[in-house]
View: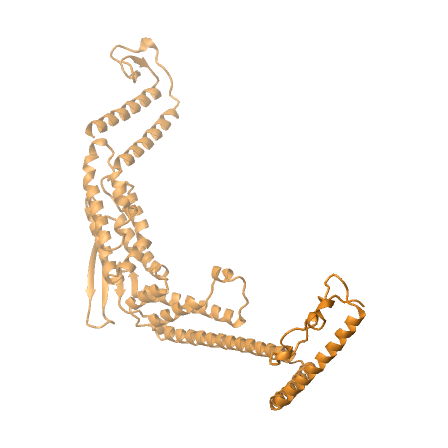
Length: 497
């Protein structure tokens, strides 16, 4: 075995021992003449090197032994600590082994998962029971309120009953609202309560309408309209008319309840006042200091004397009295109630005024001079009728019967301002009717030219756009006279305007 002199042996030991702090160099153990870096070591050199290394090793061992003996207490303390640490690690290892054993023998994560699932189920069950309890409370409250509403209805407390019905309406789902809910299941008892509510609402609506008609009555024998402050029907008698109308407004059935009253007034008061010019309206108010004796009476007196009403002043005067009576004693000067009454009556009232006055289509009890003139020369005189109609509509706006912001409700003024259009329409219809009658006579015989003398013009007519004349039949002659008359009226109208 050959080793070069460059090989170095290093011994590792504690830093405190100086002998081990460095390294052993082979060149220090061999004689100087034996060093030849280019040639291998000889056997004697190797033996010498081994002997010297053994001597050096023994020296190192002696020094280490001396060092350990000198620091015996320190080494004892160190080994004691190591032993204690080893014992602690062993105890910790045993504890960890026991814990791992517990985990492997009893799967705690499964128990925790089962416990969490049970808690979730219990919480869901608690929420469902709370919701069910809330539903029961709601249904019980609705049933109690319906019961109270029926008691108020039977006791004549119509306003309180109407408020209860209105409040319950917010919690109910009807018609399209139910369809929009997406078909969500609901308790069957809820449907029964909804049906009960509907029956109670219908009953309230019927009672309100009957009470309103009980307060407003017409007596045909004496031709008078009586408005009482208190109703006089069934168990709900002695209910104020004002409270009845207020209850109607609360449940939004004012048009239904007031509609019957409007029909009554329209049929027995307004229509006769428009169609009969011989009527006179009288109003009496009776107030003895109590609600039972408070009432207002509108008398409709008929006389054989016909009043000449060229501009409609008498007609509009009667209607003013009627509207003012309704405003004071039926609607109690309430704008909303009066507008509802006007919505129910004004379309029919305006049509009747136009038919029986403005357009001069009279019926048997209504004899007036023609309101729409038959000749173009009377168009200017129609301005008084236009003025009276506009003043009447202004009065209706003050009484809130028609809306002041809606010009479409000014039907009388619109019709009166378009009198020339109506005149032309009537004239056209008359010309067409007379022309049709002439053409149906089939009188087309022409006279011989020899029978027509120089002074005869019975069958001679002027041409329309030429100065010549021509011989025509009797039917054509009458027709040409009709055409010439129409053109003459048009010329007169153009000159006046």
